[in-house]
Amino acid sequence: MVPLVKEKWTILQSLQAARRNLLEIIPEIALHQPIVSGKMGKRWHMVQDPEALRHILRDALDDYPKSDVTKNILRPAIGDSIFVAEGAHWRWQRRAAAPVFSHRNIANLSPIMEAAADRSCARIAEQTGRAADLFEEMVKTTFEVISDVTFSGDEGYDSDKIQESFEAYIEQTAKVSLFDILGFPDWVPRPGRSFGSAGIRKMKAMSDSVIEDRREKGEDEIPDLLDLLMAGEDPQTKRKMNTSELRDNLLTFIVAGHETTALTLSWALYLCAFDERVQTLARNEAQSVLNGRTATQADLPALPYIRQIIDETLRLYPPAAFLSRTAQKDDELCGRHIRRKDTVALPIYALHRSHQLWDDPHAFQPERFAQGNKIDRFQYLPFGDGPRVCIGMSFAIQEAVIMLATILSRFKFTRVPGRDPKPVLIVTLRPEGGVWLNVEAA
Image (cartoon, rainbow, N blue to C red; front, side, top):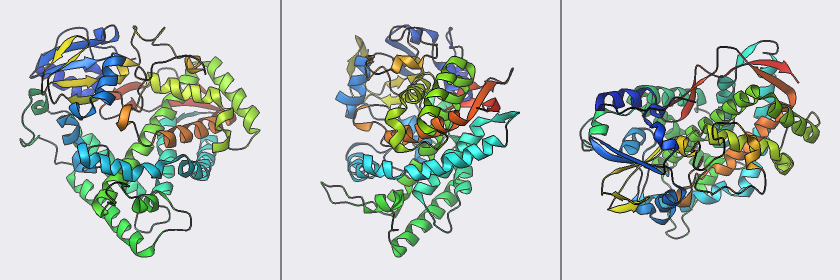
């Protein structure tokens, strides 16, 4: 765990910490209180109370849109896609895209996940007897999956270039600016926000070209994500997505669809390497169900402990570990007055480690998610909740369970002394330095 800040910081200290690692701006007291407030340029509140979070994410959704900082960071890369859009523009896109992620469509993607799991296991097997960076491997594996389910078989689509462009954008521009902290208007240019624009333009142009080619070619016999999204229609307005809307949403799904699952799997393998008891229980379950084969979507109900490991990993290391909203009108949260334009932060990392909500909150205990245990849905928010709950949640869980069960059934992992990863949050919660583990055959 990253040590959380215990003293008050200046604006410059806060900016430096936020650009280095957003976890460092979460005060230690947030693990022990339902709300923490302060002022640094703008008034801010960090909320760790399930009832207040239910109000923000569900009951008063329109009163707490994503913060301007979040939109300013992501809009250059993914436009006004489902992740960024608000109000009516978000609603029609969500209605049009929702059928794409139906249970049937997600289940039909299982063979692509299975094939990627097999290729990953083949690469991991080559590392047997030595240490390997499992984060790098999981990024490669999940990107193979999202590429195959999004732009399957399209010429002119270079998945590696898409990944490189977005990585460069995040590294160069997707960081908090001093102007953000001071509350400068959106129209004031943020230094550094334009450095990654060339790669983003190329990424968008490539995607637009593939979408137009697909329009001419028509749907494949087995529709992929692009086919399904092109066919999607808002049942209320009958509106379909144009090329730029398709592109922005596909890029959102590509980036979010592989990054979050790669992180979950990487942290899960690290935690299993850290706890031999958990890893042995998981391996025994996977081996008894799979008998040497690759996990499938049909196996998910028979792999409850693997799912509990995924859930507990998402509690300790949620990929989206810090969300930010801007209050649109005066309100009250946890008995505290919220003013219009106040920043209302949802530090999911702190919520998931709250001493008020969890027993032994820093411990890795998958059993806490066993069937029958009662957990308030708003004290556990790895995918958000309410109307804007992550649209790809079922896709991510299915992929994570298939991958983790298959990998743990074939390999044993142990820690590499002195190489434990440090969680660093910029946009997502990444393991700084990778996840280096010793690999042995199971």
